[in-house]
Image 1 (cartoon, helix red, strand yellow):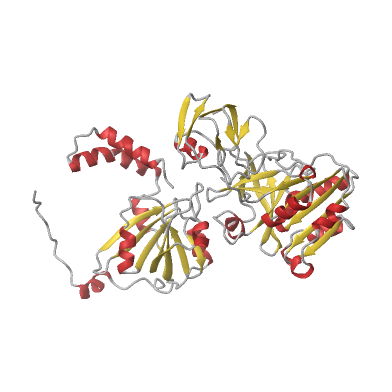
Image 2 (cartoon, rainbow over the protein chains, first blue to last red; image 1 turned 180 degrees about the vertical axis):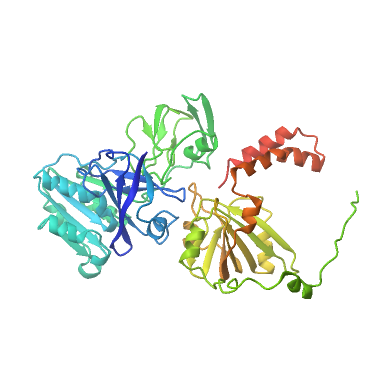
Length: 302
Length: 209
């Protein structure tokens, strides 16, 4: 964890505020475009937000938060109750959405999905790689960082306010895409689905705020052997591995509990997992908030 | 088994005011008919409340509710929603509300001496958009209690000061109590080792949602 203080909190679009967090214990941990951090909020909730500032600035992190009308208490807290000057504990940056080398980049942002793409566009432009951004929102007033993007990246940013302009034609973009280009998309579920329909899977990288709607085989019970503590925990069909471990008193962090943020990542030592996350668990890792087991037994490093 | 009863003498209702004196100056003025920004902040930081309801005959009941701070959602300035988390399933509050929709809430914030009182009327709901805001450990409550606010006001801290409620040293009081298992075994005359009851209770406490 890292200690910060809220340097600035300011509205950057309708229902969106940006938070500038200054490290109070020396330089903040470095990060690459696409990374996110967890904020430990005073109401005991942990919430993940993409870093959208300048990776070269080791003194500050910047995140932007949209007030979700169905907030369970995270974005509502940030909007209504956080104040400048308040200390805030944040995690080390994690990156499930790294910018991979490519001959050209196309960035597709939907609303608050601009946040991870903002530093990507800056990095690509800085490296001299051709890059463009298609930025979609309901209205321009609801889209954060428009002025910053237009002034910093003239000619690279296309804005589509759907109420005025309709939705951009992704198929047309796909038709003119460089064969070695990569497409990075972050936005609401319908936009990700449209991108997945328009672009070849090998060229598309997506990041979700909420899990994709999918169906899984019926839950089965299994057991989790915790190699370090020597404990064996039974995981009933109606309980997640994360909750079973926490109920057994084992220390596992958690954030979204939906398989998108990665804060509960566990090292898997043996057994066959059934991955249900939207992150794409690397080999030997799993996210116990959603993922279960194919084998009757998993051995985890806990 | 019969127990001797004591009945200290009652004071007639008309005399009570005379004995206590009039309320201090602005006390009545501070009663709001809605949740303003200050009270919204109070509720957002409160992990615990007591909820009083009564049946049609006025027989009263009070029960605790608790979760992470802000577990009670302020839907608008006149409306709150309280999640119904798993408890003992006796559902006294729901039974009372079915007969009598009056409700009284007292919100507490650990470390804070002043409390928030909210009174109004209430009913159960299963509105998906309300329950979605209450999801914890990937589970939504089956029901929530909607409170239509009639009165909201801050209550002074004297009771909490006198009770030393937030003084860490006060927690030594719990050490003077028998365990729940010991109490129940004695009260019900059970032939089960109290430690076994305590362990079963502990198991139960692991499933909070």
